[in-house]
Length: 202
Image (cartoon, rainbow, N blue to C red; front, side):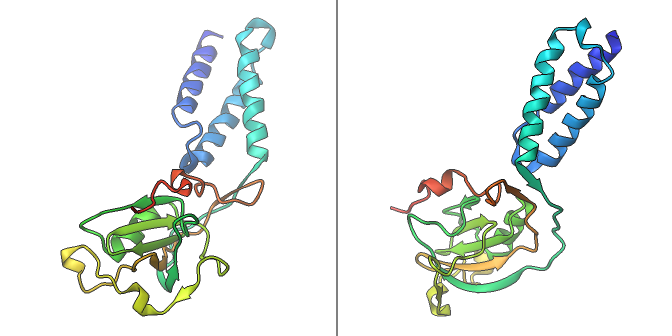
């Protein structure tokens, strides 16, 4: 019994280190399943603390039921989609943002977005990179003439590349396939602080 309880404690500790981390959700859910299997082998009447642990498992099962975990892939090749209008109060991509870089270039932005498991990347104003999992919406993000995305990338070695324009993003697919959606169909990772206008330019 002593060794089993120690194993349970270590399992909880391991879970707590990754709990609620969006990019590690599959790993987290697997850890909970393993812990549940161990708990089923213990007589709950012998340890009152198991009640608390069972509550945690029930909470996780409810969370798991509300989350659709789909298989993902990062094997696709990036593709250029075009120049699209962006807005101050309705950002096109709201999953991750990098602003004011003096080394911005197209591949660098795409690689970063793919690393963070986003399906789309957009370079803007020459020195900004935005990532998201929702494609540009026609109702908000009109497709613009290529001349609207004519700012040179800030990276000295990539000055021949065009990195968007003023409130206009050169949009690319990253090759990564979206993996997670919540019960309302929203892509997990899209609702970050950047969606609250914290990246507005002044």
